[in-house]
Length: 270
Image (cartoon, rainbow, N blue to C red; front, side, top):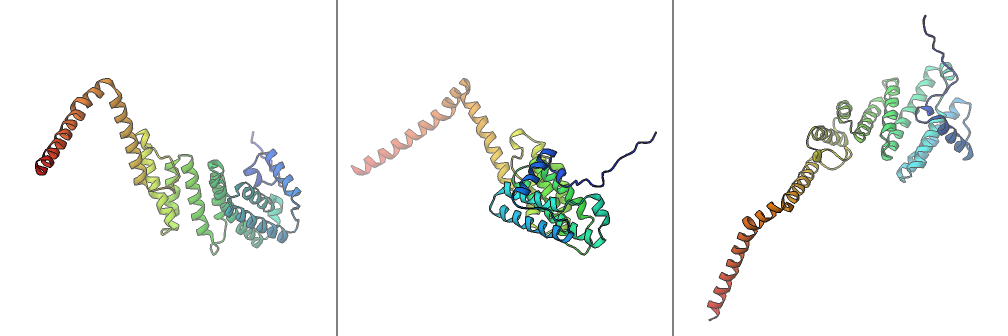
């Protein structure tokens, strides 16, 4: 007996990609409370989506991440056409939706990254990478794809999925070989993979875009040396060994040096 799959052609899926039902209801309630209403006309919907995306960008610049996320999700709501509506759109209109949607998903991945929400960074980038393949070749598809791969890699770095992040960065650097951020993240990712397989103190603890890998490794080595030396010294037998074998000889040398200098001073003074 074959299974039958029922598809709701009137359902909207983009907002629910990031939110559960109760969160969707809250976002739409705030959308209306702030005086917005989603237009029925295609061009008006795209215009409002652009306005809200630009508002989200302004909030990102001001580091107001909660407001930036809400405005971006409102913009997503405007671009969330049902399957039935999408089927009725011309090829040109579908391209216009994609040209608005892919940059928005790229922005959302950045907002989630700043909020350290690794799960939704990856979800936004996954959706963006799927849609970017549908953009026409003469558009800005390649730079957007590089950004989405880079952001997904950083999200995977937050989740300590360094092997998967490395694969994304390898793809991103093929598209943007001179991008310094991608190159730095790739180098850090290589070290993070090695550290993950090494000693616990050497494990990577930061973002892939943070300080150079040499500093991270040096700090880990210093921490480990300090801890081991401290444990060794405070053991009773080692403390006595240290005093007898190291501190006492140094003290004798120091006293001898001071006595010699004092004797010379007194001799010259006489």
